[in-house]
Picture 1 (cartoon, helix red, strand yellow):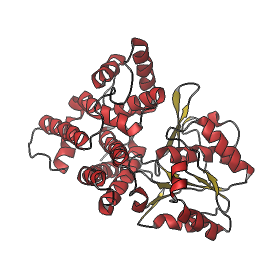
Picture 2 (picture 1 turned 135 degrees about the vertical axis):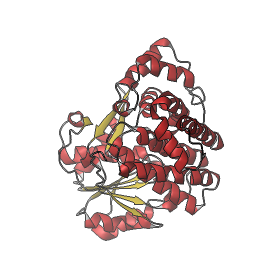
Picture 3 (picture 1 turned 45 degrees about the horizontal axis):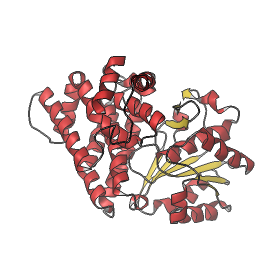
Picture 4 (picture 1 turned 45 degrees about the vertical axis):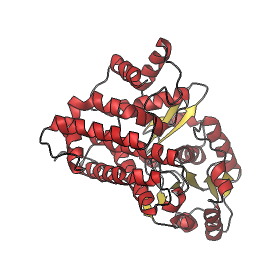
Length: 387
Protein backbone atom coordinates (compact mmCIF):
# COMPACT_ATOMS: atom_id res chain seq x y z
CA UNK A 1 0.00 0.00 0.00
CA UNK A 2 1.34 3.43 -0.95
CA UNK A 3 1.97 6.03 1.79
CA UNK A 4 -0.77 8.61 2.22
CA UNK A 5 -1.97 11.40 4.47
CA UNK A 6 -5.68 11.67 5.28
CA UNK A 7 -6.89 14.78 7.09
CA UNK A 8 -10.38 15.44 8.45
CA UNK A 9 -10.37 18.28 11.00
CA UNK A 10 -14.14 18.82 10.98
CA UNK A 11 -16.34 17.12 13.56
CA UNK A 12 -19.59 15.93 11.94
CA UNK A 13 -22.88 15.86 13.84
CA UNK A 14 -25.83 14.24 12.02
CA UNK A 15 -29.45 14.06 13.13
CA UNK A 16 -32.93 15.51 12.85
CA UNK A 17 -33.28 18.81 14.78
CA UNK A 18 -29.49 18.86 15.35
CA UNK A 19 -29.31 22.44 14.03
CA UNK A 20 -31.16 23.59 17.15
CA UNK A 21 -28.06 22.62 19.18
CA UNK A 22 -25.75 25.06 17.40
CA UNK A 23 -25.62 27.29 20.47
CA UNK A 24 -24.26 24.49 22.63
CA UNK A 25 -21.67 23.65 19.98
CA UNK A 26 -20.53 27.28 19.72
CA UNK A 27 -20.34 27.54 23.51
CA UNK A 28 -18.16 24.42 23.60
CA UNK A 29 -15.84 26.06 21.05
CA UNK A 30 -15.51 29.17 23.21
CA UNK A 31 -17.58 31.56 21.11
CA UNK A 32 -19.73 34.27 22.67
CA UNK A 33 -20.36 36.90 19.96
CA UNK A 34 -21.56 35.05 16.88
CA UNK A 35 -21.90 36.23 13.29
CA UNK A 36 -24.63 34.12 11.69
CA UNK A 37 -24.13 34.08 7.90
CA UNK A 38 -27.07 33.03 5.74
CA UNK A 39 -29.31 34.23 2.92
CA UNK A 40 -32.52 36.26 2.72
CA UNK A 41 -34.75 33.30 1.86
CA UNK A 42 -33.69 31.28 4.90
CA UNK A 43 -34.20 34.28 7.16
CA UNK A 44 -37.71 34.93 5.80
CA UNK A 45 -38.64 31.25 5.98
CA UNK A 46 -38.14 31.16 9.76
CA UNK A 47 -35.68 28.30 9.38
CA UNK A 48 -33.04 30.27 11.26
CA UNK A 49 -35.21 30.91 14.32
CA UNK A 50 -34.35 27.74 16.32
CA UNK A 51 -30.66 28.33 15.59
CA UNK A 52 -30.87 31.97 16.67
CA UNK A 53 -32.68 30.96 19.86
CA UNK A 54 -30.13 28.25 20.60
CA UNK A 55 -27.18 30.62 20.17
CA UNK A 56 -28.84 33.33 22.28
CA UNK A 57 -29.59 30.90 25.10
CA UNK A 58 -26.15 29.29 25.11
CA UNK A 59 -24.00 32.43 24.81
CA UNK A 60 -26.24 35.06 26.42
CA UNK A 61 -25.99 37.15 23.24
CA UNK A 62 -28.25 37.10 20.17
CA UNK A 63 -26.21 36.40 17.04
CA UNK A 64 -25.47 39.20 14.61
CA UNK A 65 -27.25 38.36 11.33
CA UNK A 66 -25.74 38.81 7.90
CA UNK A 67 -28.23 37.41 5.36
CA UNK A 68 -27.24 39.22 2.17
CA UNK A 69 -25.31 36.33 0.63
CA UNK A 70 -26.34 35.74 -3.02
CA UNK A 71 -26.19 32.41 -4.85
CA UNK A 72 -22.88 33.45 -6.43
CA UNK A 73 -21.10 35.31 -3.65
CA UNK A 74 -18.28 37.76 -4.23
CA UNK A 75 -15.54 39.77 -2.57
CA UNK A 76 -17.85 42.77 -1.99
CA UNK A 77 -20.19 40.59 0.08
CA UNK A 78 -17.25 39.23 2.06
CA UNK A 79 -16.00 42.73 2.79
CA UNK A 80 -19.42 43.93 4.02
CA UNK A 81 -19.88 40.94 6.30
CA UNK A 82 -16.34 41.23 7.63
CA UNK A 83 -16.76 44.93 8.44
CA UNK A 84 -19.99 44.16 10.33
CA UNK A 85 -18.34 41.35 12.28
CA UNK A 86 -15.32 43.44 13.24
CA UNK A 87 -17.48 46.40 14.31
CA UNK A 88 -19.42 44.12 16.63
CA UNK A 89 -16.35 42.24 17.92
CA UNK A 90 -17.58 38.82 16.80
CA UNK A 91 -15.43 35.89 17.89
CA UNK A 92 -17.19 32.97 16.16
CA UNK A 93 -19.27 32.25 13.06
CA UNK A 94 -22.19 30.01 12.14
CA UNK A 95 -22.97 29.53 8.44
CA UNK A 96 -26.43 28.26 7.51
CA UNK A 97 -27.04 27.73 3.82
CA UNK A 98 -25.66 26.27 0.62
CA UNK A 99 -22.14 26.29 -0.70
CA UNK A 100 -22.11 30.02 -1.45
CA UNK A 101 -23.08 30.89 2.13
CA UNK A 102 -20.57 28.50 3.70
CA UNK A 103 -17.74 29.62 1.41
CA UNK A 104 -18.56 33.25 2.20
CA UNK A 105 -18.37 32.53 5.93
CA UNK A 106 -15.02 30.79 5.50
CA UNK A 107 -13.51 33.78 3.72
CA UNK A 108 -15.07 36.20 6.23
CA UNK A 109 -13.37 34.13 8.92
CA UNK A 110 -10.02 34.83 7.27
CA UNK A 111 -10.70 38.58 7.38
CA UNK A 112 -12.00 38.47 10.95
CA UNK A 113 -9.10 36.39 12.25
CA UNK A 114 -6.19 38.05 10.49
CA UNK A 115 -7.37 41.46 9.24
CA UNK A 116 -5.15 43.06 6.62
CA UNK A 117 -5.56 42.56 2.89
CA UNK A 118 -7.70 39.54 2.00
CA UNK A 119 -5.85 38.84 -1.25
CA UNK A 120 -2.70 38.09 0.75
CA UNK A 121 -4.38 34.78 1.66
CA UNK A 122 -5.68 33.84 -1.79
CA UNK A 123 -4.27 30.55 -3.08
CA UNK A 124 -3.41 27.20 -1.54
CA UNK A 125 -1.85 26.71 1.90
CA UNK A 126 -1.16 30.39 2.55
CA UNK A 127 -3.13 30.22 5.81
CA UNK A 128 -0.84 28.53 8.31
CA UNK A 129 -2.60 28.84 11.67
CA UNK A 130 -6.08 28.28 13.15
CA UNK A 131 -8.99 30.62 12.46
CA UNK A 132 -11.85 31.58 14.78
CA UNK A 133 -14.50 28.92 15.50
CA UNK A 134 -16.84 28.22 12.57
CA UNK A 135 -19.84 25.89 12.44
CA UNK A 136 -21.33 25.04 9.04
CA UNK A 137 -24.95 23.96 8.68
CA UNK A 138 -25.66 22.97 5.05
CA UNK A 139 -29.14 23.42 3.60
CA UNK A 140 -28.26 21.65 0.36
CA UNK A 141 -26.79 18.20 -0.21
CA UNK A 142 -24.03 18.52 -2.77
CA UNK A 143 -21.17 20.94 -2.27
CA UNK A 144 -19.42 19.34 0.70
CA UNK A 145 -18.40 22.88 1.71
CA UNK A 146 -19.17 22.05 5.35
CA UNK A 147 -16.07 19.82 5.52
CA UNK A 148 -13.82 21.04 2.71
CA UNK A 149 -10.53 22.91 3.03
CA UNK A 150 -11.37 25.35 0.23
CA UNK A 151 -13.62 28.33 -0.39
CA UNK A 152 -14.39 30.04 -3.68
CA UNK A 153 -15.83 33.53 -4.12
CA UNK A 154 -16.15 35.63 -7.24
CA UNK A 155 -14.18 38.70 -8.20
CA UNK A 156 -16.67 40.43 -10.48
CA UNK A 157 -14.21 43.12 -11.55
CA UNK A 158 -11.74 40.51 -12.81
CA UNK A 159 -14.46 38.12 -13.99
CA UNK A 160 -12.97 35.11 -12.23
CA UNK A 161 -13.39 32.96 -9.15
CA UNK A 162 -10.85 33.18 -6.36
CA UNK A 163 -9.80 30.10 -4.44
CA UNK A 164 -8.68 30.04 -0.83
CA UNK A 165 -7.40 26.70 0.41
CA UNK A 166 -5.93 25.41 3.66
CA UNK A 167 -6.78 22.70 6.21
CA UNK A 168 -7.26 25.57 8.68
CA UNK A 169 -10.13 26.84 6.52
CA UNK A 170 -12.28 23.78 7.25
CA UNK A 171 -15.15 24.45 9.68
CA UNK A 172 -14.66 23.18 13.20
CA UNK A 173 -18.00 21.42 13.01
CA UNK A 174 -20.52 20.39 10.38
CA UNK A 175 -24.11 20.02 11.57
CA UNK A 176 -26.13 17.83 9.19
CA UNK A 177 -29.85 18.21 9.83
CA UNK A 178 -32.04 16.49 7.20
CA UNK A 179 -35.02 18.62 8.23
CA UNK A 180 -33.29 21.69 6.81
CA UNK A 181 -33.28 20.32 3.26
CA UNK A 182 -36.86 19.03 3.14
CA UNK A 183 -38.08 22.23 1.46
CA UNK A 184 -35.31 22.31 -1.16
CA UNK A 185 -37.01 22.36 -4.59
CA UNK A 186 -36.64 19.32 -6.83
CA UNK A 187 -34.53 21.16 -9.40
CA UNK A 188 -32.01 22.28 -6.78
CA UNK A 189 -32.07 18.90 -5.07
CA UNK A 190 -31.03 17.31 -8.36
CA UNK A 191 -28.48 20.00 -9.23
CA UNK A 192 -26.71 19.98 -5.88
CA UNK A 193 -26.86 16.20 -5.72
CA UNK A 194 -25.14 15.80 -9.07
CA UNK A 195 -22.36 18.02 -7.74
CA UNK A 196 -21.78 15.39 -5.06
CA UNK A 197 -21.85 12.63 -7.70
CA UNK A 198 -19.19 14.56 -9.63
CA UNK A 199 -17.09 14.86 -6.47
CA UNK A 200 -17.29 11.12 -5.88
CA UNK A 201 -16.35 10.14 -9.44
CA UNK A 202 -13.63 12.74 -10.02
CA UNK A 203 -12.07 12.21 -6.61
CA UNK A 204 -11.93 8.43 -7.11
CA UNK A 205 -9.70 8.82 -10.18
CA UNK A 206 -7.85 12.01 -9.13
CA UNK A 207 -4.08 12.02 -9.10
CA UNK A 208 -3.96 13.59 -5.62
CA UNK A 209 -3.34 11.73 -2.38
CA UNK A 210 -5.77 8.89 -3.01
CA UNK A 211 -6.01 6.24 -0.32
CA UNK A 212 -8.16 3.41 0.93
CA UNK A 213 -9.92 6.06 3.04
CA UNK A 214 -10.93 8.29 0.13
CA UNK A 215 -11.79 5.28 -2.04
CA UNK A 216 -14.18 3.96 0.60
CA UNK A 217 -15.84 7.34 1.08
CA UNK A 218 -16.30 7.84 -2.67
CA UNK A 219 -17.75 4.39 -3.27
CA UNK A 220 -20.27 4.55 -0.43
CA UNK A 221 -21.23 8.13 -1.27
CA UNK A 222 -21.93 7.11 -4.88
CA UNK A 223 -23.97 4.10 -3.74
CA UNK A 224 -26.14 6.35 -1.59
CA UNK A 225 -26.51 8.99 -4.28
CA UNK A 226 -27.48 6.61 -7.09
CA UNK A 227 -30.07 5.01 -4.80
CA UNK A 228 -31.47 7.99 -2.93
CA UNK A 229 -30.95 11.13 -5.05
CA UNK A 230 -33.81 10.25 -7.43
CA UNK A 231 -36.04 9.53 -4.41
CA UNK A 232 -35.17 12.82 -2.70
CA UNK A 233 -35.80 14.69 -5.95
CA UNK A 234 -39.16 13.03 -6.51
CA UNK A 235 -40.34 13.37 -2.90
CA UNK A 236 -38.73 16.09 -0.80
CA UNK A 237 -40.50 14.85 2.35
CA UNK A 238 -38.72 11.51 2.20
CA UNK A 239 -36.47 12.00 5.23
CA UNK A 240 -34.56 8.76 4.69
CA UNK A 241 -33.62 9.85 1.19
CA UNK A 242 -32.84 13.40 2.33
CA UNK A 243 -30.61 12.14 5.13
CA UNK A 244 -28.82 9.71 2.82
CA UNK A 245 -28.00 12.41 0.25
CA UNK A 246 -26.86 14.80 2.98
CA UNK A 247 -24.51 12.20 4.46
CA UNK A 248 -23.25 11.19 1.00
CA UNK A 249 -22.51 14.79 0.08
CA UNK A 250 -20.49 15.22 3.27
CA UNK A 251 -18.58 11.97 2.67
CA UNK A 252 -17.71 13.00 -0.89
CA UNK A 253 -16.66 16.38 0.47
CA UNK A 254 -14.20 14.81 2.89
CA UNK A 255 -12.87 12.62 0.08
CA UNK A 256 -12.30 15.28 -2.58
CA UNK A 257 -10.81 17.64 -0.01
CA UNK A 258 -8.07 15.06 0.52
CA UNK A 259 -7.59 13.91 -3.08
CA UNK A 260 -8.81 16.63 -5.45
CA UNK A 261 -11.22 16.62 -8.38
CA UNK A 262 -10.44 17.15 -12.07
CA UNK A 263 -11.27 18.41 -15.52
CA UNK A 264 -15.04 18.63 -15.04
CA UNK A 265 -14.65 20.96 -12.09
CA UNK A 266 -11.97 23.04 -13.79
CA UNK A 267 -14.26 23.73 -16.74
CA UNK A 268 -17.28 24.28 -14.48
CA UNK A 269 -15.36 26.85 -12.45
CA UNK A 270 -14.43 28.73 -15.63
CA UNK A 271 -18.01 28.71 -16.97
CA UNK A 272 -19.43 29.73 -13.60
CA UNK A 273 -16.99 32.63 -13.32
CA UNK A 274 -17.77 33.95 -16.79
CA UNK A 275 -21.49 33.23 -17.10
CA UNK A 276 -22.72 32.78 -13.52
CA UNK A 277 -24.07 29.29 -14.20
CA UNK A 278 -25.15 27.06 -11.31
CA UNK A 279 -22.13 24.98 -10.31
CA UNK A 280 -23.99 21.69 -9.86
CA UNK A 281 -25.90 22.01 -13.14
CA UNK A 282 -22.70 22.92 -14.97
CA UNK A 283 -20.95 19.87 -13.54
CA UNK A 284 -23.91 17.79 -14.67
CA UNK A 285 -23.59 18.99 -18.26
CA UNK A 286 -19.84 18.38 -18.32
CA UNK A 287 -19.52 15.19 -16.25
CA UNK A 288 -19.89 12.52 -18.93
CA UNK A 289 -17.74 14.58 -21.32
CA UNK A 290 -14.98 14.64 -18.69
CA UNK A 291 -15.43 10.94 -17.97
CA UNK A 292 -15.17 10.05 -21.65
CA UNK A 293 -12.01 12.15 -21.95
CA UNK A 294 -10.44 10.23 -19.04
CA UNK A 295 -11.89 6.83 -19.99
CA UNK A 296 -8.79 5.13 -21.38
CA UNK A 297 -6.65 6.30 -18.46
CA UNK A 298 -9.19 5.41 -15.77
CA UNK A 299 -10.98 2.32 -17.10
CA UNK A 300 -9.89 0.14 -14.17
CA UNK A 301 -11.05 2.67 -11.58
CA UNK A 302 -14.37 3.34 -13.32
CA UNK A 303 -14.84 -0.42 -13.51
CA UNK A 304 -14.34 -0.67 -9.73
CA UNK A 305 -17.15 1.83 -9.23
CA UNK A 306 -19.43 0.00 -11.66
CA UNK A 307 -18.81 -3.33 -9.94
CA UNK A 308 -19.31 -1.86 -6.46
CA UNK A 309 -22.66 -0.46 -7.60
CA UNK A 310 -23.63 -3.80 -9.24
CA UNK A 311 -24.15 -2.14 -12.61
CA UNK A 312 -22.67 -5.11 -14.50
CA UNK A 313 -20.90 -8.41 -13.97
CA UNK A 314 -18.64 -8.03 -17.01
CA UNK A 315 -14.99 -8.84 -16.43
CA UNK A 316 -13.84 -6.35 -19.06
CA UNK A 317 -12.70 -3.10 -17.45
CA UNK A 318 -13.31 -0.91 -20.48
CA UNK A 319 -16.80 -2.31 -20.92
CA UNK A 320 -17.54 -1.75 -17.22
CA UNK A 321 -16.19 1.79 -17.46
CA UNK A 322 -18.47 2.59 -20.39
CA UNK A 323 -21.42 1.15 -18.47
CA UNK A 324 -20.65 3.58 -15.64
CA UNK A 325 -20.67 6.51 -18.08
CA UNK A 326 -24.02 5.29 -19.44
CA UNK A 327 -25.46 4.96 -15.92
CA UNK A 328 -24.38 8.51 -15.10
CA UNK A 329 -26.05 9.72 -18.29
CA UNK A 330 -29.18 7.83 -17.29
CA UNK A 331 -29.17 9.41 -13.83
CA UNK A 332 -28.85 12.89 -15.34
CA UNK A 333 -31.82 12.23 -17.60
CA UNK A 334 -33.88 10.78 -14.75
CA UNK A 335 -33.19 13.93 -12.72
CA UNK A 336 -34.23 16.08 -15.72
CA UNK A 337 -31.11 18.19 -15.54
CA UNK A 338 -29.85 20.28 -18.48
CA UNK A 339 -27.71 18.28 -20.86
CA UNK A 340 -26.02 21.06 -22.85
CA UNK A 341 -24.36 24.38 -22.11
CA UNK A 342 -26.94 25.97 -24.37
CA UNK A 343 -29.68 24.74 -22.03
CA UNK A 344 -27.85 26.51 -19.18
CA UNK A 345 -28.39 29.79 -21.00
CA UNK A 346 -24.84 30.22 -22.23
CA UNK A 347 -24.76 32.21 -25.50
CA UNK A 348 -23.00 30.86 -28.55
CA UNK A 349 -19.33 30.51 -27.74
CA UNK A 350 -17.11 32.69 -29.91
CA UNK A 351 -13.45 31.93 -30.56
CA UNK A 352 -12.44 34.63 -28.06
CA UNK A 353 -14.81 33.30 -25.41
CA UNK A 354 -13.59 29.76 -25.92
CA UNK A 355 -9.97 30.84 -25.58
CA UNK A 356 -10.78 32.71 -22.36
CA UNK A 357 -12.57 29.69 -20.92
CA UNK A 358 -9.76 27.33 -21.91
CA UNK A 359 -7.18 29.63 -20.31
CA UNK A 360 -9.19 29.83 -17.10
CA UNK A 361 -9.77 26.09 -16.91
CA UNK A 362 -6.14 25.36 -17.76
CA UNK A 363 -4.95 27.41 -14.79
CA UNK A 364 -7.63 26.21 -12.36
CA UNK A 365 -6.18 24.23 -9.42
CA UNK A 366 -8.63 21.37 -10.07
CA UNK A 367 -6.99 20.54 -13.40
CA UNK A 368 -3.79 19.60 -11.56
CA UNK A 369 -5.47 16.49 -10.17
CA UNK A 370 -7.00 15.22 -13.40
CA UNK A 371 -5.66 11.70 -14.11
CA UNK A 372 -4.94 12.55 -17.76
CA UNK A 373 -3.13 15.65 -18.95
CA UNK A 374 -5.40 17.95 -20.95
CA UNK A 375 -4.13 20.18 -23.72
CA UNK A 376 -5.77 23.45 -24.74
CA UNK A 377 -7.28 21.63 -27.70
CA UNK A 378 -8.68 18.92 -25.41
CA UNK A 379 -10.43 21.54 -23.28
CA UNK A 380 -11.69 23.28 -26.40
CA UNK A 381 -13.17 20.07 -27.81
CA UNK A 382 -14.96 19.26 -24.53
CA UNK A 383 -16.53 22.72 -24.45
CA UNK A 384 -17.63 22.43 -28.07
CA UNK A 385 -19.01 18.94 -27.49
CA UNK A 386 -20.94 20.07 -24.41
CA UNK A 387 -22.47 23.07 -26.13
